Every structure is written in structure tokens, then in C-alpha cells.
Amino acid sequence: MTCLDTDVLIAFLRGDPAARVALQSAREEEGPLRTTILNRYELLKGAASSKRTENVGVVRDMLSEVEVLAFDDDSCDAAAKLYGELRGRGNMVNEFDLLVAAVVMRNDETLVTRDAHFSRVDGLQVRAW
Picture 1 (spheres, helix red, strand yellow):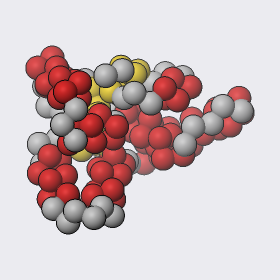
Picture 2: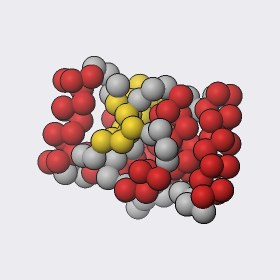
Picture 3: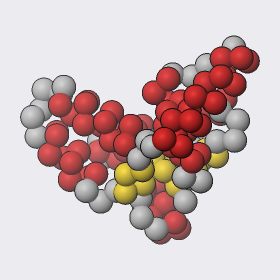
Picture 4: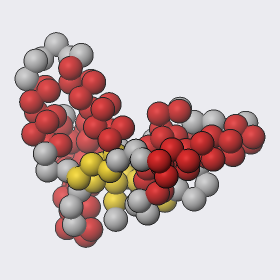
């Protein structure tokens, strides 16, 4: 199963053809599209802070067709463990992305992203779009 990162969803909303292909491909090959509650927040935060008030509605419409994976107790535990591992190696990633990685891993998903720093997270399956 695949989980879509914020970057591919933003690119899709902006009409990027590569993002459109990535979403269509994910849907055809793996079924329902997924993202995390953290990515949902990032998208809505960006839309709410934009100058175009209709952006919130556009984001909500898109998200209505995407399954949202929760940040639960198991994800919290996994994130804390990942934090300790990455900090111990001196190879941290953005803490928000660390939480996304934990949710993706706990749900046995592959993260679809162009953010290369996710490769630092051992055990996280990543697919570039």
C-alpha cells in the first residue's frame, strides 16, 4: 500500500502532470489513496494561510477522496524510537517528517515522496514520484 506525502499532494493540487500520474498509478495499482493525519494538517495549514480563501475548500475536496491514517499510540512509540536512533547517529530529519515516517511504518505503507531525507529513516519504504 502507498501513503502520499505532502509534496506530491501539493503538486497534484497545482496541476503537476507527474503528480497526477503518481496518484493515478497509486490508485490503479494499490487501491484507495492514503496520507497521514500530519500531512492533512500540513495541507490545511497551507491552504488556511494562503491568500486565496477557496484553497481550503479545494484541499478539503481532495482530502475527501483520500484515506487518512491516524497518529496513534503505536505511532507515537515508533516515532520516539526513530528519534532516538536518528539522534544517536547524528542524522536527524525534521521532527514533523519523523512523525509521518512513524505513521507510514506502523501501517506497513510505502511513502510516495520526493523528499530525499526520508531515506535516513531505517525501515521506511520510500518510492519517488
